[in-house]
Image 1 (cartoon, one colour):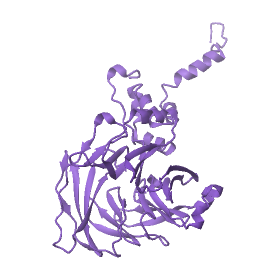
Image 2 (cartoon, one colour):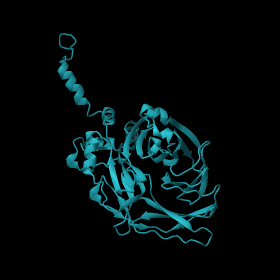
Image 3 (cartoon, rainbow, N blue to C red):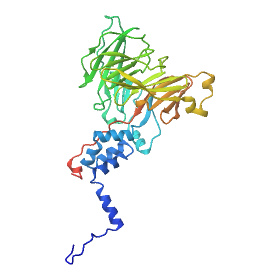
Image 4 (cartoon, rainbow, N blue to C red):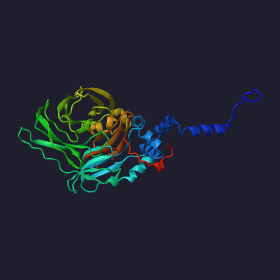
Length: 402
């Protein structure tokens, strides 16, 4: 109010000035900043945004924020590694937007001659058997070629024969907690047709730790091993090794248990069943019978018991429609599961000499490879973006907000 008793109105801002005032308030509003960061398409964009200041880094790297970001923008499939009888292990990139195509160009996906069998592929890393390197088994990081490859020493050879089981296989598996890219377990499974035990070693400080041995257990079904059947998820190893059961191993307690497959699901032949990691607990399973796919999730509780939940069913005849090869019916073609993505989001299928990528929820399918006349498929390994992203370390000179 002025000296004459009249009320003084605040000055009216022009539309341009009002808009500028609103925009200037955005960087200081944490809620708005988080919503803006959530709308970035890729983790690579999030990492660049985090380099603006310590405040932006604090929001971008907050675990609760990252959980929201992942739900909106799941890690992308960049391509897949292919192991066939005609060549060494090689990377097949899938079409990507420019942001991710640049990520692939900066990487080094070629492991050279001698690279073949892959023990595990997870979160931007592979455990690869490379014949021309000492130690043979190597951890490779294609997206971070500057870190180099790490050759794993040989783990302790298990003692066999004293308890009636003397056939064993070695599995090298990544842990899935994302905190240490060298968190690996070596599992040697000893068994005969009706019983099994396991020897575990954990890789720590550049070498294998003390070997730990489980008790011998009786199997509820006859051993029926298939290739690429081991999965380590949430502290447990799962093996497809029986017609109607999955064998489970708790890596901390070394207790072993069996999980009965869902009704109507049976391990009939190599590659009609495959496992993948699931968020939270447990694992996912994809089963194919003729031209029908079912995707399941098994939720595990601390007592190693749980329940099966049917996630989805897919009729391949409907998915392919008129694009289906007419010889599939006339020649009785087998459909084989070559690989499954985390949470059973996608599956790679081999039908005769063709390899297809099927995104389950969207029902989109595309041919990604065709085998030559006398070429055999040994393995397909999906290669995903790393999660969580690696954020920069900022010093005071980079901080514009604090």
